[in-house]
Length: 83
Length: 231
Image 1 (cartoon, chains in turn green, orange):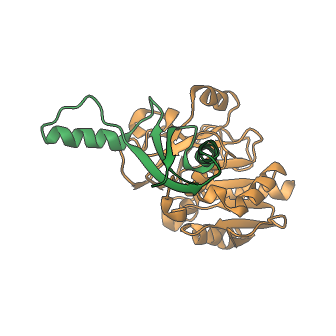
Image 2 (tube, each protein chain N blue to C red; image 1 turned 180 degrees about the horizontal axis):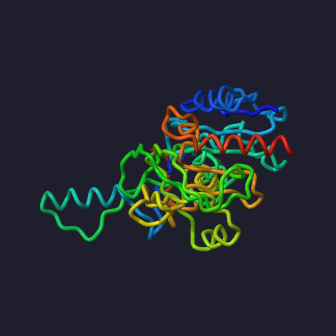
């Protein structure tokens, strides 16, 4: 079975997000007041696995070993069957 | 004695480090491509600056997972001195050889300028030729040099005297005004708990000859060579 995972990597709360801060300021120049702007990265991964559980476990390992840095990041995984 | 200079796709200070080690310090050194898996013939290693793998994913993240880094970890476990400069520091934190992480500068701009550093610890293989509290002039050139560690790690780094350099002014005042990147406690360089793996954002190889405006950096390489010679 082929699965499609969407991994979202965010900075942990309290971490500086200079890109988010810069975008917030630019929005203010355009007249939009916001409470906060934060950035995140999304990775789309297609993979074959025997079950959804195994696919999720594999993607979780990928996050821990490479895609995220646990010192500074939180991550979430959304998994579904590939269309 | 032979020192390895680890070369990844995108390293760009490798030849500067080679020049300084060979021509200025006068020690045997050579470039080693990242596919090498055996570094047993070398007595120490330098991971130079640059943009390994285009800084894809995170600065240093891809390089940290290449085969040569297993060999570097082996060298580190044998007590051989390893120095990571700039991108090399990022590679060392991403490989977990050093604590913490290096994130985007507080003001998100590439900063290339002279910085003054306060030498906090001279009891390391890389700083024996400095005086404790001395102010040295070594330039930075980076966009992701903002050192971050959680509270406990930061406390441990302080307690074990693992913080080797802090950004300071010319008189040695460690203030937010002279912090170029937002690093916690103005941290510019740290060493591991075993005291043979150092990482720093400033570039000592760019401050190793009088013609470059400072010779403070050369003392790091000379300290390292001395340490190897005495071992």
